[in-house]
Image (cartoon, rainbow, N blue to C red):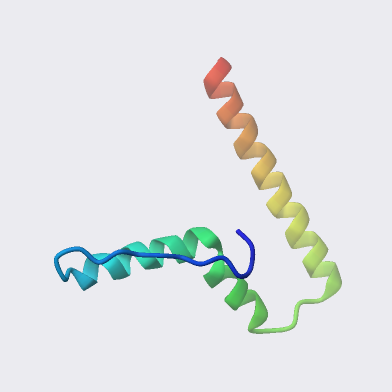
Length: 72
């Protein structure tokens, strides 16, 4: 999602606890907590490249596993 997308959570029957859980799950899926943690401290450019490469490899492995499940 882009940086300025809006997240909306509806509260049913004044159940604020459930709405907060839904909001937290949406924020985690959006990657907000990960971005905040990354911004907390300086990351060297070499570490950034290494992290991005690892993330890319993880995504590719997971896509390959899903593909193998579908056609395997």
